[in-house]
Image (cartoon, rainbow, N blue to C red; front, side):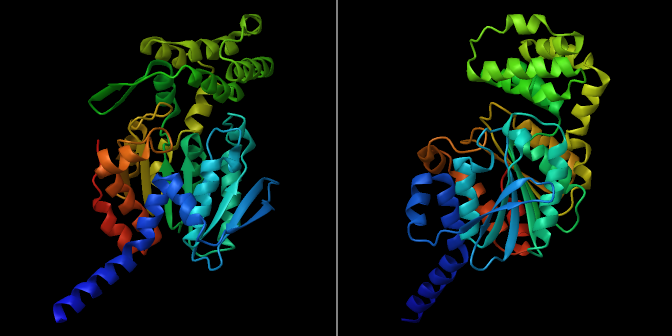
Length: 369
């Protein structure tokens, strides 16, 4: 009888300790399960607020917040209202996080100008007024501004990057040629043609000639709407700076891409450096979680490895074999064929939801170089 009591006690203790992480992980990996759980959970209140910079933001407030997290969206017209980001924000809120999701109009327009960094700083300041413990997470190209802003902050609970980048030059080489590398390892991935026009939209604001900036913006907008749209007349009107960026986005050979990168205008090259978080990675304080999908066709997983190397011992990298850019492939693949991914994701979630001691324990999560 005593053995049974002890066994039941152990099972109950383990269930209580890991229940939140298990539910969070399952909901994160399987939207259908999340929808089922949400039916039995109170819906977190969502407030629309305005930051000091007049940037609109959504605030998801649980009944009893114990910490706060800032989510920085990536390149998406939906911005803060992207369905998957809304789902994640509600998931965090159901687990006791006060969640802020600002609307970064530049990122929503596929632009990255640097203004997003200052907007992120203001969002962190606003959250610090609400909670003693604040975390920052950036997704995709939004991870750059998130990390750049976090480098100027001390005392953050933790910092996260999901599918983020270290150096924009490496991302440009990957998007145009599929080539990426880390250390002595060299890889060649799939080139998604649509991403060329996302790249052009991203680079357009960095061109110092106003006429070329607007022309490139129009070309990118038309090609994103219709990849087969004829833009030859617009391209013919570009000046030297604009032509260099257009040629870069259309390059298909690594040596050509690297040559074109080297011949961009000084202002554009400086902007690429300024927007690359590898330059500030050593200044990131606290726990740094770098999560990346091995099948990412927008930003290669080697960028997270590069960020970790530049950040030092406090960084932990998790490469998920069954994830693409910012989410899982078919759920059954992750849970059944990729059990290591499920374990890694579970330990990450457990570390985030519990005390710093748990985070240190989770630092033994298996990672794949």
